[in-house]
Image (cartoon, rainbow, N blue to C red; front, side):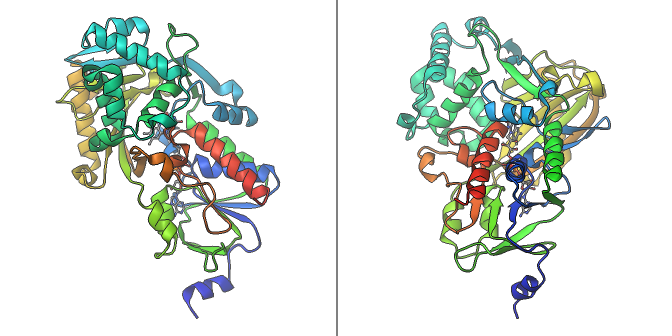
Length: 447
Ligand SMILES: Cc1cc2nc3c(=O)[nH]c(=O)nc-3n(C[C@H](O)[C@H](O)[C@H](O)COP(=O)(O)OP(=O)(O)OC[C@H]3O[C@@H](n4cnc5c(N)ncnc54)[C@H](O)[C@@H]3O)c2cc1C
């Protein structure tokens, strides 16, 4: 008898429950939707904590997300869920100021007036940059851009100088050496999404945050799912899908075999590929999508560094392309006592930074911040930590729209949720909640 047959004889869970793999926002949102509809679900999460990329780690004794999260004006599905969970009075909106560090100084970069005064660009460059942002706000038909690269489209639209000074560093923040291979619709959507956060052109973007950060949302979801009869198991890793007869029959995990006729894989695509049979044609197709890893330094500081929430950095001697002074949006210091600042690094599988110890990222972050703000001293740092995730950001080259996988896999009973399905939108919590609701409806409706 094979090991799988032996495990099948003593399943941990039997019957036609839905198994959800992954306890990030997608897995939790689909579990919420299904339990709301009276379905029995079991959610399995490999880590000991829920949340995935939105997970938290303690700071000053309170949980705070390991990666910064903010909410944009158009994030309707997130705001709806927040209301549904009774958290509306914990959602706040504030101006999200942006600055630019270039040629040794910080320039405000929030309002149209800031743009007009932004001397690193020629006057023509500033005007073209502003007009392009306006066009992106109005534009909705992105398909005609599908085969253009962001680099080509932006150079044609704003000129080479504005591209090299403003856009290239922003693309480098996320995609490192792949910055010139990103599709035009991806960058269009990012500009479009941010513009939804401005009520009028002259006002700064209003960005949202939850008191207590993403942890508040994740905890309410966890409690809601459990109250509705769902089962959540952390510290359980899915090993392989049992789909011998072209339909889902179960799942092998670190804690035994789970019988299931429906499985929702709410995990990054490469993790799903690992769960599929080795000779799977579907797995081969999915594995063509490449990802960059993320490593993000979270600093708790005694003093604030700037008055901006987001600072873009274009300086050859600084090892990162931007930082996020989170307390300037979410005044964590009001209840935690510290100023919170994040410095993200993105790199691919061939990058030497995969081998860096945590301390090296932290040193690079601190060195760079000292170049930006000379008063910054080691004594300002109360706590420094690094978080890493192997699949931080999918790389979306031109034509990516044709590669986006459907919510339903070819194997009967298997559904998937991954940020690439938001394309041309960037990964975001609100979009994943929307997709999770759709999958919940499909599963509950037997579609
Ligand atoms: C630095 C950074 C900043 C961000 N900022 C924002 C922001 O400001 N606003 C915004 O809306 N979004 C932001 N995002 C994006 C947002 O965090 C993601 O879109 C979202 O969290 C993805 O959720 P998910 O559940 O789809 O995937 P994930 O969060 O990746 O969750 C997948 C889960 O599956 C688990 N898992 C994987 N394999 C297995 C297995 N075999 N068995 C069991 N469990 C498994 C993982 O441990 C993980 O918990 C940011 C992301 C990063 C990295």
